[in-house]
Image 1 (cartoon, rainbow, N blue to C red):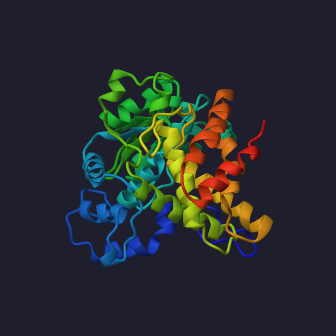
Image 2 (cartoon, helix red, strand yellow):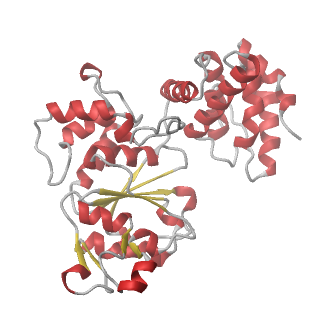
Length: 366
């Protein structure tokens, strides 16, 4: 949807809007066989996600291409897809890209949480019409699951293991029988049958394992795929630079982030995440999730701080000022570990920005 005149721009349009030109180009040239209800063939959907520079298609997900192949094949079957992994490994981004490629729409989203109810997943009622007319298709308010089934589209279920078990199990019949009952309605209106193209992509964080463990029955209806952290520094650095540059441009920052500052930031994140320095020395790791997504957020904050406070791209000292809120979320010991890292490990690294990082350690709070 276009922005209203005089209104602020949409901060983050969905994938099918951000990459509308690429999707249109792929649809025009796509001569592959498509599963029933799909907007693209598997081959074109894969190209949309992993990219093809020769065709002008950008790479949107940094990870193992075979994961994309397995995910797409799963979505073409009758099973749902469950993406699991550490927080910040781009599971939500991948689910969004898959939905945009398969359905051309990634906006049918259920956000899981302790307060999520079956009404928010399946359907609810317009109570004014319900009182006036009784249960009818007019008074029915379709939630993402019902809409996805009726329209043949992908439904995204974020953080499924954050939901109570009885709420999770509302997916059992739609995933197995491809049917959703609406007992308040009579006749044909009381059953909604899934159309071609309907499926569910769920995400779950491994750190939430055991919060609301999925039932064995529901697990059988999903194919599990693990999304791993980015294995090498160069790839992670390129990703952080690309995403931070995009965020900074949207935030009105007219200079790109400094590559040498980002290299310090990403290296520090990797060392604090893994508990091993570049030299191979063991060190204290943080209990907080020092993910790539968090690194992008800190890089964004560093660029904003440098530009709007001083009119430049941001320095290593800004990294220290922006890091504490990411590194020490719910464990006071993490702040002490971060302080020791800046005092001991940062000083051991060579380079101007590393020495600036060490010199700015006093900017940590506390």
